[in-house]
Length: 281
Image 1 (cartoon, helix red, strand yellow):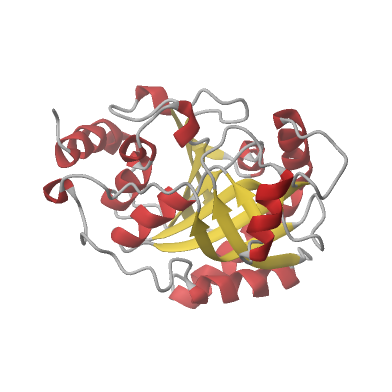
Image 2 (image 1 turned 180 degrees about the vertical axis):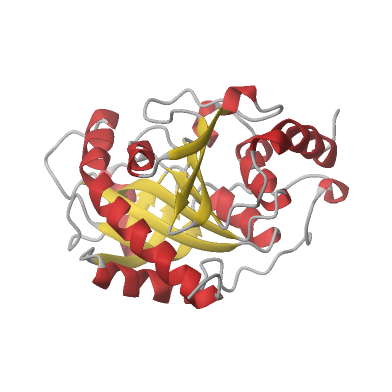
């Protein structure tokens, strides 16, 4: 079996001719949010099925491309699409892209996802900044041989979502007229949507939004010392909070409508990020 370090070395060898500088920020785009890249002229596009050892998504709305673009002079990498636990992949495969981004030297990661609203005050179309999360899939990408790890065996999770990035996102939201919610995110395995009883339980636990992704990526990001900003698009209200039948088509359609908001936010966020990090004045 090829170990993780060898796989990453193989992937990096393939990728190295495509970029000459390390992207300042990587943005993972969840279901239906891939169209965000159309606002930023591409410098390089790489189909992920060409990258050695990179997992292939089988879910509609996850295109499977890496797109290098510039925002406010900063090189950014958009990851169009992700794989999910419910597709049958082990978590070590699902989180491989995060290991790869970290090994490229990327330090800051924006993770976006489509979610169901558990908080009854939320409405479809809201964008929620993730403050913390609950792992309700009862699985973990760090399970396995400790010798095949690329970071601490027991990473600290006291601040998986970077508070400085959260503050900067809220400031950027105000400047770009994007009204963010804030809340607690929960990961479930899927692929079925939650029952009304499960939603009531999640609400009792303090959950504001629920989805079938993101948390495994955040765990690996914490292990690899990446700064993470999580943004969850509320595409629908969860079972029991609405009379509507939930469908994946509804999720992707609602995400398409949120693309403009996310574009405006990213333009402002990267500009303020550049100033805060001293990239340029």
